[in-house]
Structure formats: C-alpha cells, structure tokens
Image 1 (spheres, rainbow, N blue to C red):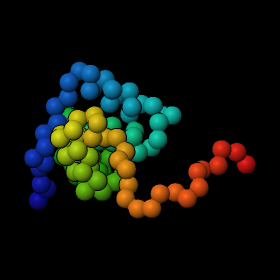
Image 2 (cartoon, rainbow, N blue to C red):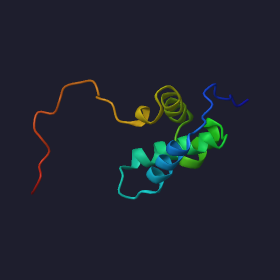
Image 3 (cartoon, one colour):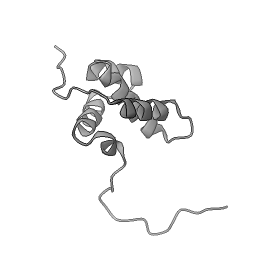
Length: 95
C-alpha cells in the first residue's frame, strides 16, 4: 500500500516561477533540474512513488528532497558540503 507523504508542498508564485525556470533549463546541472521537477510534481499532489517512476529515480530520493524543501524552501535544494577529505588538487582548467 503506497504511503502518503506528511510533507504537503504548496508553492508561492515566486517559488513556482523559480522552480519552473530551473526545470526547463538545459544549462543547469542535471541534479538541480531533477530536484526542481520533483518539487513541482509534489506541488501538483503527486505521491513520492509516482514522481520516482516518472523521473526514473528511487522513492527515498524524492522523499528526501520533498522533506528538505518543506523545511527549508528553495535553500533546501542547494548542494551541501560533503563530508570527507577535501580535494588535494584543484580541477584542471585546461588540457
């Protein structure tokens, strides 16, 4: 039996506009586009399972981003610092 999320998403006009912009951009990193699409679908009332199937991802991933958006709004969709050792060398700028 599918579970419903306790985090109901309702978007302001500005949030909806920004997420729609992100979801349609080809120049943004893939993960940013996916997160925006997840939240837009959640705002339409879709379940985590439905969103996961449509975006070809896991339900747990959708659940994580729905919860972060619910708690922190747009700031919750940003990348966070990752644990672990920092890079030893900066990425090369040319070859």
